[in-house]
Length: 140
Image 1 (spheres, helix red, strand yellow):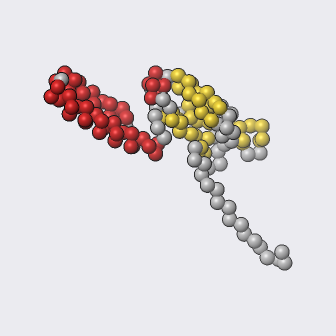
Image 2: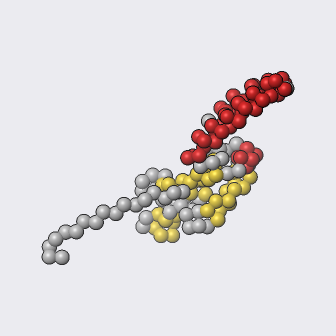
Image 3: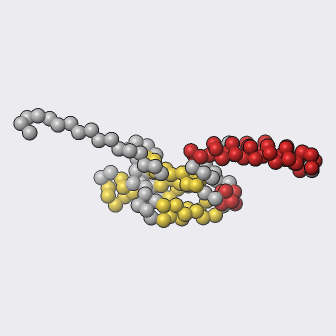
């Protein structure tokens, strides 16, 4: 080109589901919306990998927020096409963006429940007042 230099700027948009563990890492992290009952009691959960392959992840009981390892389902390792990084699945009740709205809804509904039962059933009201703060703490 007649001795002139051309500069090209490439901007890569972040993936809506997967994030790299580190800048040059082949490991991926994803937050997977999981059934609340599965999070409490454990069980299997299906997720789609980066290649649209359906993967089954075993979720241990009470594992909300923990990283579950799926070996060799991340990105190909640079310079080693046959080796892949790992995928870490973080089971959550909802995606992180909607979690705050869910907690607000539970707080609102819990307040209504306690108020409605205050006059009709003192035992339920007492239990609601005792258990409600513990539920809110578990949701944080």
